[in-house]
Image (cartoon, rainbow, N blue to C red; front, side, top):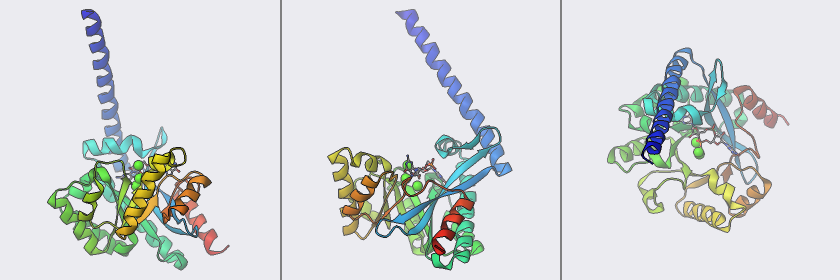
Length: 280
Ligand code: C2E
Ligand code: CA
Ligand code: CA
Ligand code: CA
């Protein structure tokens, strides 16, 4: 038994070792990728569930790896966070998403109230001088803060006075603030009022459960009702079926995104989609 225990330990250890090697490799690649500007953004439409109009896009980062092709952010964002590389990536993302929005607003006056949703990492929120830096980028690009929606995951919403202050500063500058993946973190609903939030994004896992499980439906309903009472809008993530869409319409959820409407699109495809809608 003893020797088996030792074997098991060896196997475990080797897996750990392999994992750290893999992480180190990705970290090395990521550093190069930042230098070589191998990142690009894809854009997923956010639509009104009432009339189907596109109200905005969420910018989602992609890594165009020279050997591996497009790499999912689920694979490299956690490593970028662990290694601190997320900071420089995030500034590039913010700037690129603002430039894209500016271009579309100029090209399509019809869509002048289009918003761009941008994911902020927890680390970025804690960076000193981040509010000023965001402001500078807006000025340079010529985009209004009110057309940018900053998405902050529920898990990175810490109750520290510094973070609460930062969020109020962002709000005062005119940014819209959204809590991302709502329902998956540990924040209780009663904590919400501390944060100047405009939008709750209901996590895909609840939308997914909704049609199969009455409990799932009850959770989504509770979130939508809570939001309505506090003048917060709701966006449902990951809508894939007509059945889900109809349930959400019945619950009066206002906005949604998901493969039913569109997958995230590259810049050209998003442009084509906007152009189609303007000139039917
Ligand atoms: P997220 O912010 O919750 O983004 C939504 C994810 O759900 C995206 O995955 C999107 O492609 C996917 N999705 C949208 N509709 C559907 C659907 O109908 N069905 C399914 N199964 N999936 C759907 P993606 O692009 O792979 O991004 C994964 C996560 O990586 C994001 O989750 C976000 O946490 C992170 N991420 C992506 N871009 C950025 C970024 O620019 N900055 C930061 N900090 N994180 C990012
Ligand atoms: Ca998001
Ligand atoms: Ca989300
Ligand atoms: Ca998510």
